[in-house]
Length: 332
Ligand SMILES: Cc1cc2nc3c(=O)[nH]c(=O)nc-3n(C[C@H](O)[C@H](O)[C@H](O)COP(=O)(O)OP(=O)(O)OC[C@H]3O[C@@H](n4cnc5c(N)ncnc54)[C@H](O)[C@@H]3O)c2cc1C
Image (cartoon, rainbow, N blue to C red):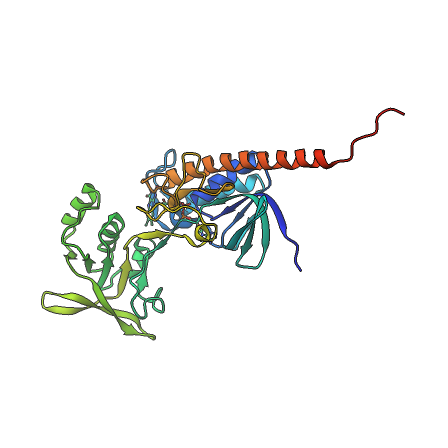
């Protein structure tokens, strides 16, 4: 049987919240491990980050490399495997990673972010990367000189994606199930209005993905005809329909979930409803503003709370050890 690793603080994730937590935790000089399969999180794949204070106009991947370099300087180890399961085991949490590694941690900081929403249509998974994408900022340049692409969604990411794609593809269809775009920032809506090769299809959903396994996606079916057509021939489909918090591990641990947002409920110290478990970043209801800067700030605060818990548990162990030690014989 393989040995169970013992750490003070285990951090799940490799995004802004996780690296900031790792940085602060290591500086508190507690034994810290970061565990996550994929480097950088959404910041690394989100394209240019123009609003991270002190780092104007920085590519998100490069920004996350800076986060990582700062953590690496403190020799904080990283396990390149996701958290698979977590259970409470006395004063510690037993966490198992996808690669089978077992870890006992006194505090766990969950910084596992959110999962992009899918359309749940046949062939969607099979053609992901072959015509279907969930990140327009990452994949838009692949559609240079292509005839057409479509974006599904009605928030900032969908509008930004459509405007960006319009620089590459001749025609872009923005497909939204409601009758009006109310969520995007006004400045983005203005740019959209000025981008003449984006066609907005309101009250419409993608009903079907068309294509073949050899060619990948070649078109989509529409729930409502557009200019007399109920199918569109396109080269790429970008699903920008929002994201849901990753709740597998929070649910295993029985953490309280905010019923209004579906996010892990935290207080201002990023404590969850279970002592010893903290959550930071896009996963939580700590702030409405889901950004790299807020994720990093939450990671730092969670590290302080996790550190305080480690100190408390260890001093309890110390007291127990002293109480159970045989009384010393004094005198001669
Ligand atoms: C297209 C796009 C553009 C954006 N642009 C900006 C911007 O310009 N400025 C800005 O400030 N913000 C921007 N954001 C938002 C920003 O990227 C997020 O707010 C930020 O990434 C949240 O950080 P996080 O660490 O909470 O989560 P994430 O960055 O999502 O990181 C979560 C990490 O957890 C890992 N993980 C998942 N499951 C597990 C598991 N079971 N075990 C361990 N690890 C796991 C993931 O692989 C990932 O590494 C953008 C987001 C998107 C999608």
